[in-house]
Length: 559
Image 1 (spheres, rainbow, N blue to C red):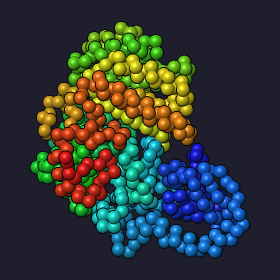
Image 2 (image 1 turned 90 degrees about the vertical axis):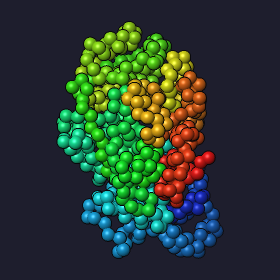
Image 3 (image 1 turned 30 degrees about the vertical axis):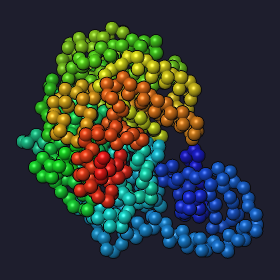
């Protein structure tokens, strides 16, 4: 059972203080938090048995007079609730005689407990979206049909791939429709053209091995679980940014379902303005059902040196100073991701650092000399590029991909590395871990990726504004239980650390990679002030009714 959730043991009408009503059945009482919304005040009217009043999850018997009054209005209340249940409306709309889906398209509702849970499970359950129905299209044609259906009936919807997105603006969709693209996960490689075509629901895990087996490389993100298209349309930062650029720099074209329900090709030759926009702000313009990427000829025969280090608190400052020495000199083939985490055995924070070099092993140790001089414990290996994510960080990927965890995430881009800022952050995290044991699963991830190939692409080529970023700093706070004091402290520290990093970032203001945005940033801090006029005009042209408005929404006018 989910902490902080109230459960009923019989079919019960629950009237929330916000006047949202629904029926909670016996089978639904064990639903997790993203399927049933906790509440602080409710009247529960059982279909049989005694009436109770619930406030702040404390039960109290109510007066018999009140019970008799409610008994009189109970049939009326029940009729109103059943008539206004959003999932009932969606059920009728999605399963009516006027719509025809392909046989492999699946439609799910909350009363289909296990299937609905599996289709809506998310990487983070902090401020999540909530759905009254899920459709899993089996074809692009069904995506087109459901967008038309939802649009004409003003039903809020959200397309999902890996369900790894975590901006809190996604939580603005309530009682909506999830368009789960997981069935569109094909990976097709054309050896002659050295291209790959993937479905909109394919994850990095789906892609890496087939590309490697075909004799190619392609840039990816830092984890295996996100959807590749979702990561791409934000820009796609990763370890190979210095060699191949951002993932958007490998994107050749996409099939996109527009707000008015048309399936169009988007590329440099077809709808080039929209192609510009989806490379950096793509979630605002449509649903990508498939995408074509340019594959790359492997460097260093497709092999990389993976080195994992652990730095105790006593040498953290020395590590940060060594990290700073790479300011302006990080080779295109060298990438690092460092994680500040809590060591339960030592009762103190520590640094887990992963360094990857896409070149000869002897050269890797020469370049990493400032790190090796600290003499930390090290585990290293030479591995094919498609095994980097699985191997990196002492095989930390399964932990980073764990679903159904509350995570509040703040971020800041940097183009300057600052040892003093990192020292301060490390000390503050140490105090936070000590003061809030329930939040010791919180992490700071410092992604420092070379940008030589990324900045070689003209700034005007795509909508993404932060090509010159050297690092993406991620302040990931997580906790157990439902303690509002811990959650508040985590969010306060996340905002404060973000502000601290801005002062030494090399940027005049906060800049945030859109895929890492918390959701409270200004639109200029996400999309860049000089990109916004063009983006806003395109938003007005392609999505005038704001159907695609839940993922860090663009305005349709700027300034």
